[in-house]
Structure formats: structure tokens, C-alpha cells
Image (cartoon, rainbow, N blue to C red; front, side, top):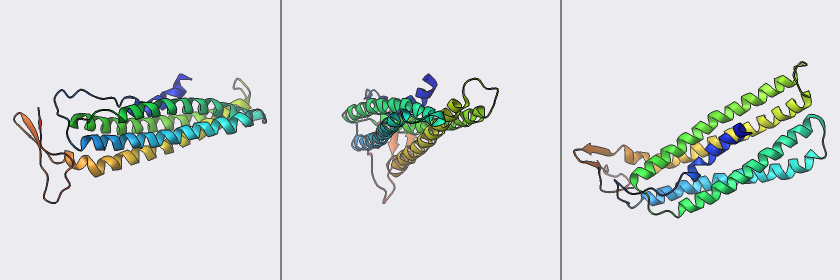
Length: 220
């Protein structure tokens, strides 16, 4: 069961870890808070989708579990467990994202670290989702093995459920990663290409006609 929850923990980690950071080497600046707030809203949107998915699984499969037998019964049984975990973690993560949205103005270093951490975690989740799909295929194959322990209907139902979970989460993480990457590409990454390093300071240069997100220099 811990292995089932692990990918969902990393899924919510961007929100759970998005806490205020001390401004030790960098001063709060205009623009960084707005960018970080928009990133938090993207996480909140995704967590609402995850919560709705979990609630739908609880409702539909909760009813169907008592009305089906064979592999369909085990399929809905697994869905109920997944739905409960998804709904609980989505609620916790959404509350954490709301608290993070009320944080003081973020620093440049915190914005960059938060953006990269979020994108990397969604990519990491996508890799774990592929492992879900592989496990589901393994269980389906196990259900066809007459020497396997346990009823084949159980392995078939559990395998089908894992394929559904893995497919949904892979789509979910892919959409979330794409949304965050576009957000950074529009507003943050152009800034990073304008950084210039010198003795004792890091300066931001704005090309003619460019859009200014942050201004000034970053003391080391």
C-alpha cells in the first residue's frame, strides 16, 4: 500500500513544499510574488481535478462493489481504495497550496527553485505512473497463469484497476507538467537567459522591446 501512495505524495509535494523561504541572500522584488501565485493556482486547479476523480471513484465503485462479482468486484474494490487515497491527499494538498498562496512576496531564488522543483516532480511522477501501468499488465498476465496463487479474477480486477489509475495519473501529470512548463517559459525562463554574472553581483539585462518581469540586480 505504501508503494501505491508514494507517487501521489510526490504529486502533491510541490504544494506541500511551497512554504515561505527566508530572504537570506536575495531581496523580495516586484513580479516574483505574482509568478509564484500563478504557479500555486495551477497546482490548486490540478488538485481539484484529482479530488473530483477520487470522489467519483468512491461513489461509483462504492456502489458497484456490492453489485458485482468476479473480476469486476475486485476492480471496483481497488478503485474504492484509490479513490479514498486520492481524495484525502487532494484535500490536504489543496489546503497546503492555499496556505502557500498567502506567503509573503517570494524572492528570485525561491521562485526559480520552486518552479524547477515543481516541473521535476511532475516528470518524476510520470515515470512512476509508467510503473503503475507495467504493474497492471503484470497482474493481468498473472491472472492467465494457472499456477499463480490466489483466484485469477482478483489479479485481473486489480490489474485493470491499476491500468486505469496509471493511465489517468500519467495524463494528469503530463497536463500539469505542460501547464507549469508553459507558465515558466512565458515569464520566468526568458529572465534566466538575461542573467549576467560579475564580481560580487548578478545583473539582469532587459533586451530592447523585451518584457520586464524583474528589475535590478541580485546581490550575492
